[in-house]
Length: 209
Image (tube, rainbow, N blue to C red; front, side, top):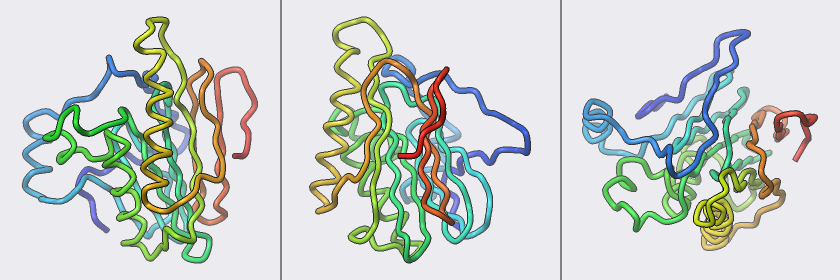
């Protein structure tokens, strides 16, 4: 198991609460977190071969194999990306905050999952390390909503979606399902045993993507 910045596992009966992501709430690593990441000298990601449910936070990613569930909450203008290899039973989940890493090159190195153009390669790497083949994997997106009324923020979700699609296309891969846009935050999860991807929004029934 590799744990550079380990997403939190959920205790039985617990429901984590996170504020829907938007650029105003971009997380910044503190001195201790930055020190730990720098000393590890590798992208922040979480790999597991054990059955569990792992919460993926904003600007994070995780991959799990054989038996496990990944879930991310509060997908507002952010975009969640699920990759799934049915043969290897490997699932990966990425929570992208912003579209392009040129906004902060240092942060892109420390937290590649923050940006679409660095997060997608990091997700593919995490899945490969568990035996997945991205070329035969299925990819699905959720999020990219317009959470605030300002004109600048209204476009962030759309830009995130476009940047994720572009990064996936650049890798020679295809998006096979989407639940994007709108004004509601979303919760996205994937089961590595079955490949089932589900999307939930406040006041709406859970749907399979």
